[in-house]
Amino acid sequence: MVIRRSQNMLSCILLLKMVSAWAIETIESNRLASYTEKSTRYQKWNPEAFYIPPELIDQPLLADYKAVCTRLFASYVSALEVVRL
Image (cartoon, rainbow, N blue to C red; front, side, top):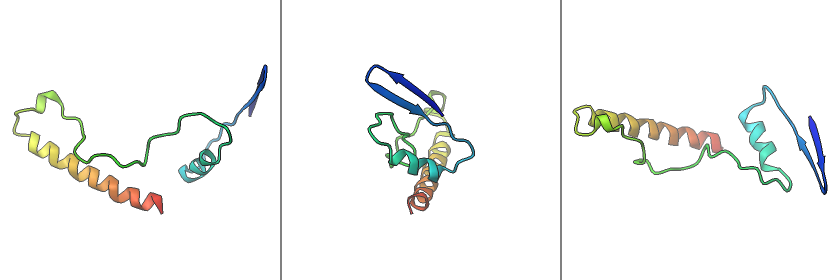
């Protein structure tokens, strides 16, 4: 643990190792007066908003690429439901 003091502020940095994602989320969710940006993992996004490499545009593999991205996103959404429980 690192504790810093400056003028009117006292801050503490806590480093944790070998802690589950659930424990980290619990700790981050209970922060008091913290303005640190949280992770954007486990959020819902548009299923069609994936990157298409320019070299695949107008190529036969584009349909396969889109199908794989769509299946991966569907897997992500189903895993997200489990994580949120």
